[in-house]
Image: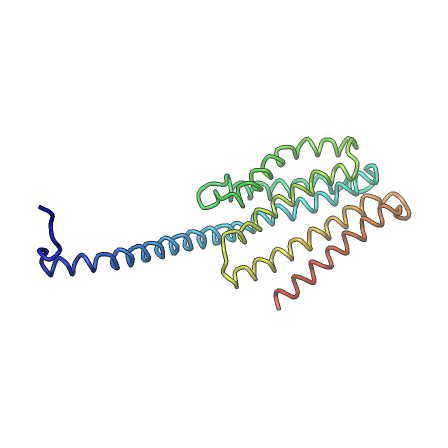
Length: 233
């Protein structure tokens, strides 16, 4: 015999009627809890990348210096910078060692695509550094070919720092990040400008093509510097 609703005790009926809104409330609470947990994980990832940013930017800085010195060395056929290129490379090696010690692999909180992809790509390129240096020493790479190795490598390292923007929507954090990245990008544009200029130190004036490259790089650097100054105000 089918159970009739009127045969169900009132207390049970009230309990059944309360179950549906309680279930909905539980679902909402669970959703909010998961969202808070994700926010916490994102905040931890942001903090971790920010903590490691100096190791990355330190390597970027030394690679920029080595690129500029290599450009002058190639452009002068070894007449200039031969006395400093070795020291530049040692500085880069020390920065690379610090980078490796700080970030041996993109694991744990760093194992998100925004960081891992450019980081892994940069690590793969860094394995070629010794070979590139040998080719620079032998003048078997032109300045554009040499820069064609260093500049994309630096861009990959910078992209790994920029990945913080992919895991945070907190306004002040994003503002600080954009200002920091604008500063790093302006520094990189200025480095490219210097590399193009140094690559032509053995001539008394720049060729038209070389001059246009320097001007374009310098213009980009000015734009990024203005962006940085406007953001940090």
